[in-house]
Image (tube, rainbow over all chains, first blue to last red; front, side, top):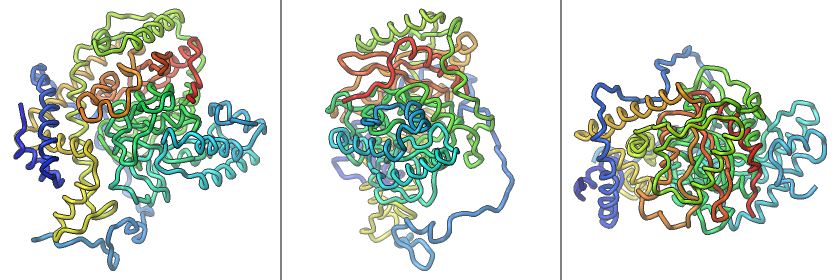
Length: 95
Length: 485
């Protein structure tokens, strides 16, 4: 099965990665090649087999809801590309 | 004392304890060694020499006050996806080039509590995606046994640092082989603990149902000591195993008479180098001579499918985990476009390397509408089939022994443009990762002058047993403290 360049552009848009034309060409060929190798999985009989999301039988791990120290506002904002008045600043969300 | 960097951690501990030298002297020796070989090896992204000497002085005070532990004053390399408060943590990516963490990971906290000395943050494939360390945004690490060859990956910097004497021990992380494969290619012992044994609090996430932190050292005892330090329950990681950590040292230096070892025939494939096959056969004969039963009739028929299962599940999880790198909260940000969405797409286009983009897109595709059942859900079901085969095997065998990698170290550049050829490097390490089982790689000799690794896989939380086999083998075979260059 081969991916088309239109499909690769769609995937890149979903993943929020801008691609140049040369990238589209390269990734289309490489991703198609990788997906071809995955085709063999379809032949494995998994009738009635439950999926594994996680290797351990742990579920619903609970702890007490306790108040504990956390990062200060200054620490939380220290790595922000742009901050203003204690907020993280971004460009307009709506076009 | 000269060339203290040649010591293993437990040898250095004896010297520190007996006041033959101080941690400052030991640390300085490692820093001098780094200055001498780092231009050839490039094992580190960030060196922390000043911090290391400060930590070494604290360590010497611990010895003076009688509060030292086996890792006090020991120079350690820390893979650069392990978050260290106040010390830049890049995960090998340009997108985190200037990221200074405001907190520390559980494993680094434990190392510091034990008094260990961090000499630097080790190089790695970007976000741990790779098997050669060539996908680092900070340039490749060279194999200390032969510069020009890869050290393996993704914890290639950690393994190369230990092999070159640029650290006595190191922390790496393993998602599909990223500790074991570089340990094999660099002649180290490297252990991937059971999923849940070591807390991932403060570890840059890649594949959350697979990631584990683990140790790399120059002998089995050092790896056991490191695991003891970092393992155990941490309520800050909900996948952390609540059971207490057993004493790993209890398993060292014991015999393995009567132990049942399964050797799966599916691991002896056409792509395996003859030199690797020869070393593995010799190692199996050694294990037999120690009184273990080596059974070659074991079959794990779904071994072949582990690669596809892994390369669907890990990228799927990565595509979700790496969504956080949006140029908004921290990390690199391109603000040239007019809207937040333009900024995000450009930030990720410029901030991520090609392998990371490939895996994010692969995962995005596998999770997208119309393909979820065919790829992600199918892979999760085949994962169950693989797990069941291991469970059946462990009803009959104490441990499973295989090669760690089909080849020795290969030239830088040889596979970097062929993603699938690169993925095949992990063919022997992926199945245990998919199942969440613990596995250790120990050196079992050389082929063409380059180290070969033997993989010992154990049942869930049976790290003690694989270390017992590794320790008995190491004692008999004598491949320990292998230093390159």
